[in-house]
Length: 320
Image (cartoon, rainbow, N blue to C red; front, side, top):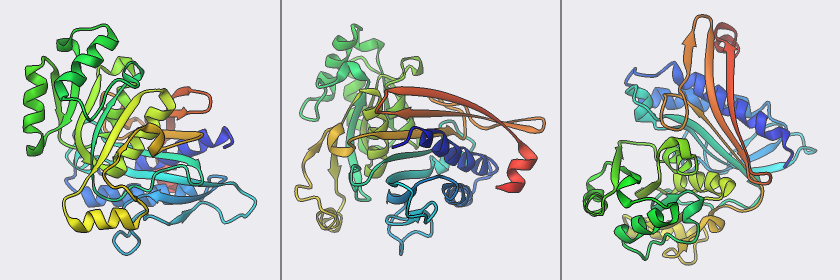
């Protein structure tokens, strides 16, 4: 993929973040998501690539949003074709309630290099490069914590582990705490913490537990770019979910996925903050200008860019 696409796709997440920011704290999660989707879909039309959404917000009949199989971007046949995984607003509840950690996010690859993840749960563990090849779903949470601590040259009680605050994680949280971990519970949005495990200044060492499978692929795309570790396994709530995964091409729905099973090749990962969190600053209105922070990563070069953008608020909101 052409490196100029990194900046073009950054403009896409920026557009969605600005649109979503108008709904911060208004208690309307659907309205916030709809605003982000509309802005993102329009921004895709200005990118010099023909995209296919392979991870989105459900099938066409189930979601009026950016749906799996949707074509985005210009129809010019001379433009390159890419696959896109997208979450126009990761953390809709966070945005609606004015809480930290909401982002707009996407990952882009050449065709056929992203796992077509079913809309189900995934058990996941993510950490930075020090844990590469060392963490495993076959190990206990305690053993994974101790292994990562040893790899980082730190004590287990010096590591911070992010876990979604759900009843299903009560035993996991208990075991990690008994092993010495500092647990940071989050209400929603586990993509940003997964990415943050590869950013030392974030203070997040590991993400552990069951979350969405599509979000797992998005997080793995960033991990792939930065050389971290991610392991995952699909978790089904019903026989119908298992059958759906098989119908989508998952011949072994119980397999354990590594990073390279989820995403391969040259990957572009971009995220823009909506509400401030440990990874990114949120959208800020100062006078007549809006200020944004994005993270743009490309696996081919290993380049990590922090993009600070300032736009004319009136002009941007009127035009977009």
